[in-house]
Image (cartoon, rainbow, N blue to C red; front, side):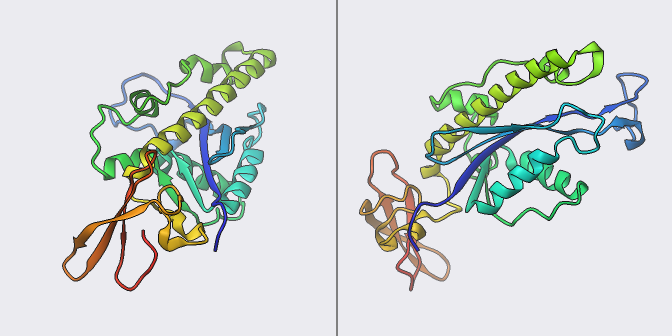
Length: 262
């Protein structure tokens, strides 16, 4: 197998539930689902393919009287995931992917195709990094990638028909939301590229090379791996390698009996 892997980076923006409540303090800590007047939904999504410059986006219908105003968003993302070898989202494990799967099942669409998932936020936690915050804005700024566009909750409220918002104002708010959404995807790619050599690769990029035994599983560069001793486990000895390209430096291992590092 050789070629370029299809790595999808994406981000969702969502609208909240609308419901009835009598006060800000809830003794039980949870409102009943019977209080929901209008179900939450996906407002828009943005995505790009890794190392491809163009960022795409799609918006849901502003007619929130529909049961599934986000149906076109669901169908578009489902098609993209089906083509992907791996999907990347920041907090995707607990937010973006569960949202997508749940809304698709509620809309009785075909289940989302199984795919490798990389959650940059969750991986930072698993790999025991100690950033003061794991929010995308903070991590991106500390890694020198950039910062999010400054918006507040008013923008989300302006996308909804409540409070006297006109359709013209709502369209303008949605346009700004999509700009914010696309910029988040740009930051996500930058963060992923800065981090990937220090994370365990979920997708082994060496498998997409003509010479996988000589290819870094992190960055897919050929001929950059040099042996750096051994790694011992309870039952095996693994050959340890490091990528010596200045923009990578990732570590990998070759298991006994296999010519392919991982």
